[in-house]
Image (cartoon, rainbow, N blue to C red):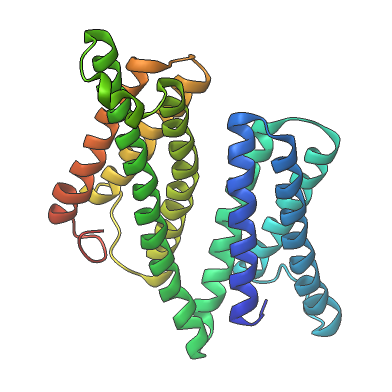
Length: 275
């Protein structure tokens, strides 16, 4: 399996956008977003099909003879099944998790292939995975920070109304329900970004041969932050938490994020600090 570095980057970019759409659709059941994600994923599958066709019929090399080729073909099969299920059945849970797993397999296949290439582009691609991993983590932290500030504004606004004080500030803070809803929206976008970032980090560590420890504090911290915010979504969507309780949880979740960012980053030996 060989393709130009830019083609791999396009595949992963489109796939990442599709995953983000599927995740939001899974949380809020947005049919329009589901269709967009479906067609984005179809583009990924089509590009993969062209690569596999070129390898099988032009290069005369059946695409399952090496580990890299086998993983790429495996990801192609999983995406095909996901597209069929999405088209015929409305089973959002299996579609989302199949795509998350196939994204990991596809990323691993492309990264291993890039590592095996002596060409400088292969080395550059592996390095870019680390850069994108860190960038996505920081962007997700940005979304979580805005969500935290909105939750904090909600709690202050709640106290102003309850105590009938600071009335002149109420209009500046905004409506309680809107603050609550916006805080949820920012977490809903931040979680899939961090999840993709974690997947990229794991694949980069495996492919690059960097020292990676599941028990490293930074690794544990990143997974903990992801778990805490996934629980936030579960409490909102599954348990119906709203208002003050979910806002307090949001503030507490952000404190976990800060501990991971600063304290765990200092104590960690994983790639470079503070990430």
